[in-house]
Amino acid sequence: METPFGKPSDAYRVGILEGKPVAFLARHNRNHTILPSELNFRANIYGFKKLGVEWILSASAVGSLKEELAPLDIVLPDQFYDRTKTRISTFFGDGIVVHVTFAHPVCERLASVIEDAGKDVDVGIKRGGTYLCIEGPQFSTLAESNTYRSWGMDLIGMTNLQEAKLAREAEICYTTIALVTDYDCWHPQHDAVTVTDVIENLRKNTENAQKIIRAAVKRLPIDRTCKCGRALKHAILTDLRKVPEPTLRKLELLLKKYI
Figure 1 (cartoon, rainbow, N blue to C red):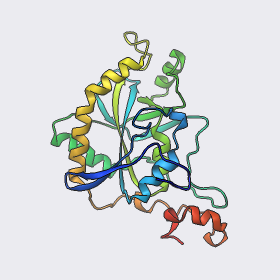
Figure 2: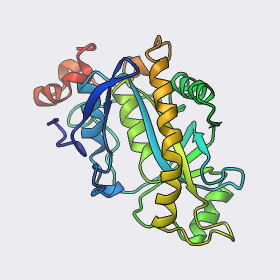
Figure 3: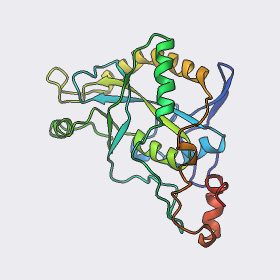
Figure 4: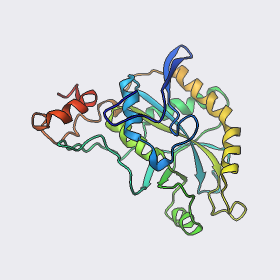
């Protein structure tokens, strides 16, 4: 798929799961050839919008910054903290100013569906916590890891914050299914995170993640009584009659119900 923001990470795989139309995108490409900082987040989310997606279930490997969040746990964080430095996190600009509400960055309605789906398939899910998003691609230093712990952060990853921001701007419900693979480097028994460790624990958790996603899809769609589907209603600061025509054309998919 082509988008006004370039190419997404890969081709979208579309099909039917539990009788429901779904779309899947390998965020790092199916061959895992794209660094977190190289991801075209705007194209990825725009592509989902173009396909008519209303719910994004984002599965991601994360490190744990808390003893009680152990490797192989599955967590639904409800907050994000941004430590990235170089990423574009908005569709807007070029003549239009938009400020969406982001105090609660994940869709709690969708998170409840996922939590209930875990119960359906007898897979434990821990609800809540803050996901700290770092630039990467290096893992944290020990000093950084201990600092993040002192801030009260729960999980650490490299991808999900920008997805959450852009999904909100696209008026798509978004929740992260965080798959804990390691204790970052703060833990005395796990003081050196390796890709081998991450991949092994991710492989172990894949089956449970698939079960949860399948069961969640079975429960969807539900009424969108959340505010995600109207996030732009009171967020557009610029008079749309004053927005440059090229910008309006580029953003028509996002703005059409407000024009």
